[in-house]
Length: 228
Image (cartoon, rainbow, N blue to C red):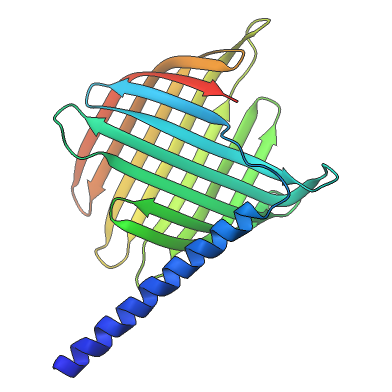
């Protein structure tokens, strides 16, 4: 039995090393692309249960001739705290994708949560036309019986004045775990006004976790967002 557990532990350690190597490969690729990545938006929010900050990078890369390439980089970094001195909840998602002209592409995702790092692979779709934008993917963890993630971000910003726009955004993020047959469902809604590079208004975040019955939480409040 001791020999069996040693083999299992050795395999687990090798898998962790493999995940770390994948992460550093992603970092190397990002650092050597011919375009400086910058933070596109910073959002702060305060709700009835939590307050936090949300940084999003969303950029299609250009080459040295400033021509668009099929490579798209997405980065999302969130941190939030409740009002009871609980530990900070942190999440970081970074993705590099190769996209075709029809909007579909292949994507590699590295997800950092409080529990650790998880690499993921899958397909992605990106579409931007006028005031509307959609970005989403379907990815799976690179683990045995790893979770399946479906992510979608919808944004609509029609002009309602000379320097004023409506700002509306919806995010849907269902995660399914085959090993436990459980769901983790997240919805984030933003509705407000955008003046030049600033947007603010009402926010609502919802989460449901469970299998046959679900435990639900919500965070309703206000947000302020600045784009760079």
